Image 1 (spheres, rainbow over the protein chains, first blue to last red):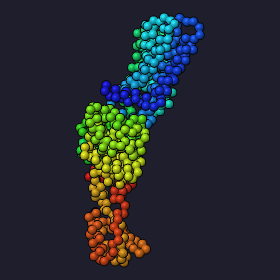
Image 2: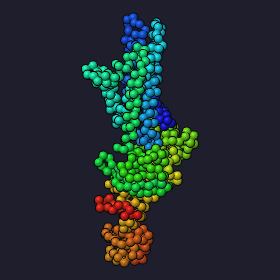
Image 3: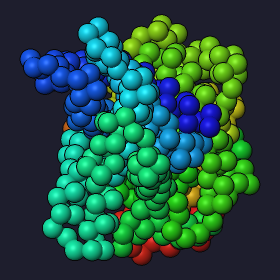
Image 4: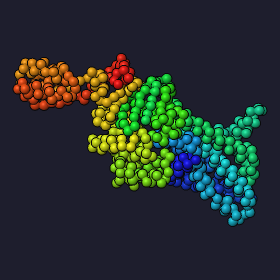
Length: 241
Length: 319
């Protein structure tokens, strides 16, 4: 655990020791704010719950993009610059390396998501919103952040360059997003499998409406578990290649 | 300290290291000498716990590299050819992080940091951002990160590559000083570097250890005498006569250069015969104007060891 925190500490500092971390956070917050203002609030009268639902709809996209941009450098950058030798030659277990890097990305993502709290807060000015709805929505956003960051961590672990890692994690996430379309044309039992694997359609809409379903929570946590386990296995395998 | 038995390492189907066996005692400085691609770096990476062996046993301080790789890595400090540095960090901040990541407590790292910075002569650079340092100082920071956790074995892969002559001399001092507290392994393809820095040499060729021992042991095992070039004034025939009669000269070749004679002489019993040879020449009233090494003796040994595939294994050749 100590090793994981050491890795997380270094990676967290790395986000803020160059322009990248600030640029990603700023860009995502600006886009999120613009989308909230232009579409969620809009220029027509809406129920507060509907505004919040649309805010969480856009938050899914912006959080996913942020996760891809923040995780693509995690391991691939170390491999590119040769600093991977530092953590390879340290007595750190592979799960500590993967866990530490993932933790640092999640820390930044959590800060990023927390920085959007003012947007649903604005709805209180002229409307009435259920705190439960906001809490459920943010639970969904954080689960999406956790899942997409884990996929990004995996892509970064198996890639030699940050760019490849970015493309790979984008491709994997797009595939997960498009499963709902595949489910529409597939026959049972594959229809149910593809439907269950859909990152957004099947599992996120409930959070947008203020509902927390155990199945959805389990789904996102399963992606985290599977991605981080694969990343750890891959990290361990590099010593044998 | 280090026991390696039958180490073999494949990259796909390519055997980078084949059946390498050697042992290294505590606080020795041992050089791995070989051409580029000979397998030196692969051996060092296995010893550092970065790669697992495909076959064979590797033990450092009694710890098996395959069974307990994490425990092994606490005993090792490793500097690859290109120092692995987080360029955005400051030197002291980086070293504190590395020390703790390598298993030492915050208090221990803070206590040892001044000593390590002093040893690597980084005092004036401690608070500078690594990206702003020269190549020589980055190498020093690389060594500092390899020793900050007080390892029992320090492995330096091509430590002088890319350094200017002054930096090389300073680096040599740093490397020698490491011996006081740790076993030091160095890989290099620069013969003079290995000869000047190391107590013992392992010659690696095509993935195999083809010879091991001190410079003198290697020369003696291969029947390689010292060769000197003499600059003499005298008659060609008279010089030839003296050298034929001298017990110090095993073989020689005389060349006429302008006003002087230039003579390459292989000494009969190594370096100690130098004085006897000069004494014989002086006694015969031949003017001796210069005595110089013909080429580096280790270079001759190395070229003989690596000239073909018909080289016998180390244990038979030079032990």
